[in-house]
Length: 592
Image (cartoon, rainbow, N blue to C red; front, top):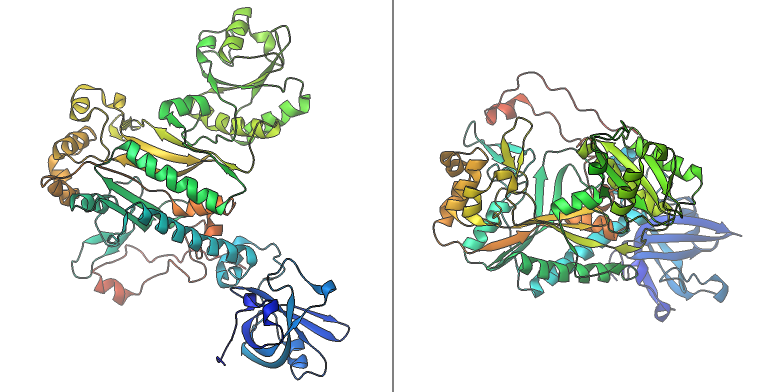
């Protein structure tokens, strides 16, 4: 028999009754019922119940071994009595009567309980992540992640994509975030950059004649943490296709995503094809380019109604209205709670009116609206009797930000929100450029995208009017990916970067490898890069992305388990030709 096990804990079934087995695993739980000892033994595959009676030599050591110790047991598989069958366990029909016992790894006092899964601070969970990962919820999430990755690989391969790898040590890239830099020992004063994305390399794969590429790609960005974004590093399903346009990308990705989400969440509705919403249209109707389409409510820009109005709270401001049908009879407390919700998001307030059966308005601000204001408002919001209308007023960006969340919250509170569904959409027609705070023109999205209209658009249109062949996938209000039809022409690339303030020499220096390749027969190509961590977060139904990553950094971009980042001694700095301006302060560590 094998030194450690003949079976895994979750493997045993009724067909194994009366066989002798050897099992190894962690002591999950223990119960002493009238002198008979029951121990739950756990490994990666599941849990099986052990039983030891007082006359067994294993009884006393099993009674005293600490929870989460690793043990090996020998025993005979017994059928459980009918009244003791546990239908929630795959092994629930059987138990193992222990005849032999050995401690393989003892366990000290635990910093928190693995079972039951009592609440514990995130800092402590991350410091002892190896224990946290033993807990059923986290163990299930990491197994799910593995299964999702395997499924994605299978699906992409079936679509003719090659799984390829790109470099980790490379040059800096203008992806919109800070690079992590790696000093070069062999080339003093020079640095590699960890890739924010494999953007240039995957395009070069297309130039090299590989028709379809994908990779579960690690990406590194020195940016702040958010609930849906892990600081430091993340993974994405990186995809590129030759001789492809936007429609080709949409066709493949919609099929892969629809199959993936139906496979791992069969009890939730996933509809396709995904609706396509223009970027500016999304901002107008939803207040965001990441709309949660589970809410059926839409915003309406009514600023024009109040231009020059005597109502000073709205006069000459950006005013966004949210009509909510069927809730005009809600109690005053509903409106007060919605106002409190908006104020928590930073709003000064949240004005509202009701539309009565006679088409007239009631509510706190109704008296400030003229008959003409009322008529135009009811018409613009398509307000039926019984509709409540909420208003946000102020600077456009601020109003859009909080009203986008008010839109979702109002839908949840009035039964106009779909639960247990996945609602995807494509956001398309992003502007190629945007105006920076100093008035200069800069890329608004991916700088390697093809402008709609090509070279002619770059030369004849105002930069802020140029649209790009860029697109995002959004699901339930979470951006899963960005993508674009790529620019594969040196002439177009020089022109596009010149508008953003780059000289030809700067383009040649920073992107020389790609520009040079484009002079040697570059095919039209397009791609996309859905975030793997966010996909798993959605399918695991987790609100925080760190719950789907085995060893994430904390919100301060620290690994409190391994103690990173950490100082480097003077000899190592000299070897790398580096010198610090001042002695580094040790970063704060997570506490117990």
